[in-house]
Image (cartoon, rainbow, N blue to C red; front, side):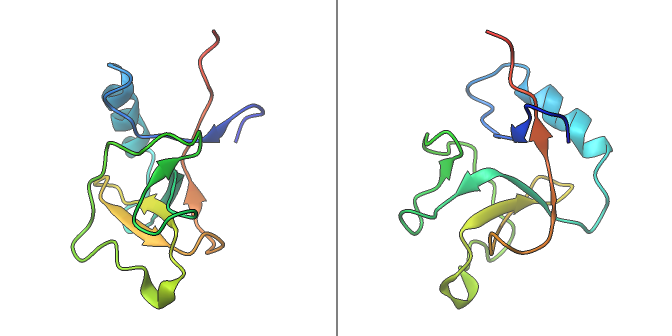
Length: 103
């Protein structure tokens, strides 16, 4: 992870290049692993926000997800196919990070 990076936000509607950037990230992902992204429902169960507090618009759940297993799965991870899973936030996983654009 680079200094100044943060968990990736998958908001394709916001950035025309986001889909291309996500596809580049997929090439580096390991099959069968899950990767945390910058999205959660920590404040309101079932209402997903990105780490900047904006409502998540790009949601592509894996089969039978989200399931909030044991009532404690509030963070989102993705697999290589970009299908989303809800997981416990402190579960050890890889993460996909991004470096914000210079403004």
